[in-house]
Image 1 (cartoon, rainbow, N blue to C red):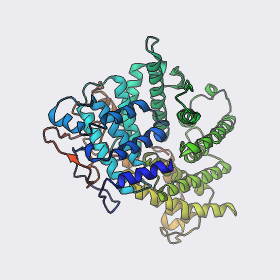
Image 2 (image 1 turned 180 degrees about the horizontal axis):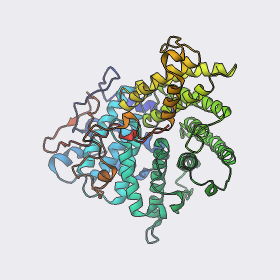
Image 3 (image 1 turned 90 degrees about the horizontal axis):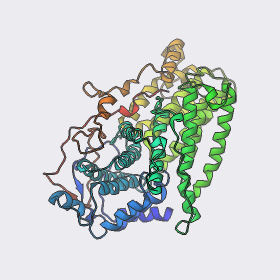
Image 4 (image 1 turned 60 degrees about the horizontal axis):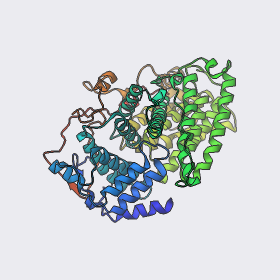
Length: 549
């Protein structure tokens, strides 16, 4: 796969993209523009699609590989179809419609975002341009069915996890779950459908399940539908034949392994945060349950190593340590944890922070939505653990010093850097810095924030405990979750559009932030008659609504 990525880098570089020279937030000058595919080297398009089909689609199979590859084959000789489609209103010669062009452009946008390791600004700029074209085709779409609408929503969720500053994760997954429940996909498919259609519906349900469960767990939200209501089996019926190698089969199974993790994550969320009855999980003692799920998590992690050779489950270390942290942190069910729990929390947090710092150094921090939430949680829980361990002797005291004087400051610096593109990450770092200074001083350490001041010189102990309590168990949304007056649309209003038509003039999927600048040689077609002017719904910060750590 490394060779493929190198070819991708070369193909993209040959396209002559001019990139911005700094990493601060940019304002786009190409809003409403449509990319001229004829100016993009076909080798670049093909390699970007190959990257998506071989690495990312197997883990999040929102659309079939054959659909994406067929679209690429059909545009090969008609690369300017997408432009004439808008300018003339005539059907595309290739026979592709807005749905197919949306799928092409959004998969290109997703794929391009994973090339930040080669050239971060260039990858982001290319992804923005692809996303702009995908958005324009989406807004022009008026004849999609519910399955296509579900695929669109899930592809947008995937992109929103990469670029939360451009698309709102919450709204996209909410729309997807509404369709899932309307179609009853969680209960199976009608027997009258073909086996292929049944498998597609089953697969789409489990993709939506994984994305929704991840969001609910990260944001500490009630589940959209109960586990007990699910009767459709996982898509484990992938059968080998002459068309598939054993490697293909193993890659396809990576999605199932992700679903297994989501099930563990959901179980932990239900027991520790939603406080569901332990008897549902065949336990009566919470300590026994923690031991049991920890063993299952360890087995999941061991199996996850086998996917490394296929470039799958790249973030398995993050997933393992994050769930381990959740199992041992204070929660509504277990508000006070033991010193041993706190040691486990510190070890898991240190591993999480170091992993994300490594991703940043290698320019492979592809999913900042989850990254920002996980880093914030790791820092907040670590501060609470350090506070209650502040009287510890060596060797634990050295662990506290490393966490408070190095790991957490580095974590907040990374959040601040991520915040240059997604403001919510920066605001969360600002929220934690004063508490870091207080806890560091209380433990008797000096850093650049407190200059060795005593805890009493900064804040009294009661106030510090209250701040930590508010972080772990907030009463309502955190301050940066609140939308400006006039923008606090209820979810009932947002989802009340009640249709699968995306061309309704109400751009609920995207906030009104302008996109980043891009000055490429890849052509952009401006068509005043078809340029979409849409006030949109400003959802900045909405994806952090209900954030509880």
